[in-house]
Amino acid sequence: MAIQPSGGHKDEWARHWQYPGVPGLDLLRARYVSHSFTRHSHEGFVLGAVRRGIEDVVMPEGTIRARPGTVVLINPEVPHAAHAGVPEGWSYATLYPSSQLIAGIADEETTLRGTVGFAETIVEDEETARLIQAVHRAAEEGNALAADSLLRIGVARLLRRHGQTLPARTPQAAGSRAAVRAREVLEGRMSEPPSLEQLARQLGVSPFALLRAFKSEYGMPPHTWLTNARVRRARSLLENGVAPSEAAVTVGFTDQPHLNRHFTRIVGVPPGAYQRERARTYKTG
Image (cartoon, rainbow, N blue to C red; front, side, top):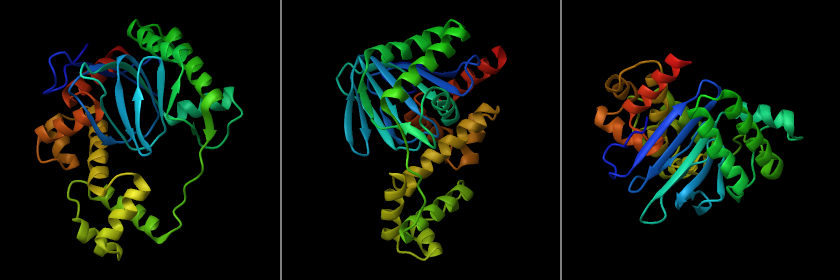
């Protein structure tokens, strides 16, 4: 089922779904022209392969141009945004494997230990790009054996060539500790968050010091991080059958149109379409 993103170009379509044959994996296949992804991050990994056109992916270190034959590799919690790199947009297949899925493959097929991730953000690898597309085809055909096998072959290939053990992050500096505490406050008060000044006063720092520390720690300012966190929580509510209108209010959006806009710009499809795909997955799974 292909869904046109709300308010998007007439030639845009997208499908964001789960395939029960491969637990721990989300899939997105889409064509975008005017659609853009606002800055956000994921709890798991992003493995993307452009089929046509060019996608500009805005990473903390700069913008990369994803074109056919390349694979985009984004580690968990790394903030990024994306938009079309050419007027005709881009079409692509993206896999969102969980950290647990990647860690299991790394443990079985590589010598990497600890917290595993990728050392590069984009690589030239036509064969693995084709494998990512093939995982989608197998999942859409209901071929669990092929989908799971191709996923593991592709991920193991990428880990052996581009994997690394990520350094452990423990907040040491006072600013870093303040950012972590600010995140905890925002998580606990998602529907009624404090202002930046109130939050800074609560933590005993100045507003600008907190702003700089939070962006340094999480790659985005507190209000952007909060929108991303609200969308994550909304996803969980939608997956559990909560209506989009109720999910919007629960996570702190003013109304459902606000949820629709932010959800689509982060997930790639509207919340209603996201929920319908999840319902189909659970029904068929």
